Image: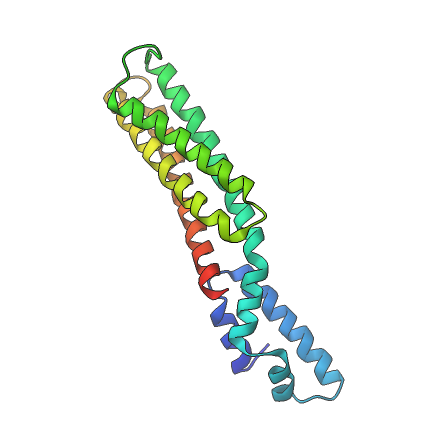
Length: 193
């Protein structure tokens, strides 16, 4: 695909390479069909539609699937957070029946709020507009829980479990960054769509 029209469409959809590639392929196929029918390229591009409108259509059509993928990623993050939180509590010998500390409360409550927000997002999965806010809230709550959990484990870094604490923390932070990237991508979809 060549020409200003194709480059403009790719530029509008550059936030998602897969989507931009699909649009490029569709445009190339359409232009080939129109050329075979005897229509010149400029007229075929005009009939295809305004670049902004076409980009908006592609983004709107892809948004629900991207939201479902993000919900799945957030679910895996919540599971990892719960497992690592429990593992650190057990490995460090935290007594679940002891007087809770501020960090343990933030850890547990943050996780529960994040899990509840994920349930809300899951229940709204058929409504793309209604899923984004609970996903953002879940990500923030799980990030707070992760931070509190890691701060609770900080005194044990010098001990035998220090490497595993760092490794689980790195995995959780990596998952949080990945989720943040997915949520940022969703924001780009919504701006275009």
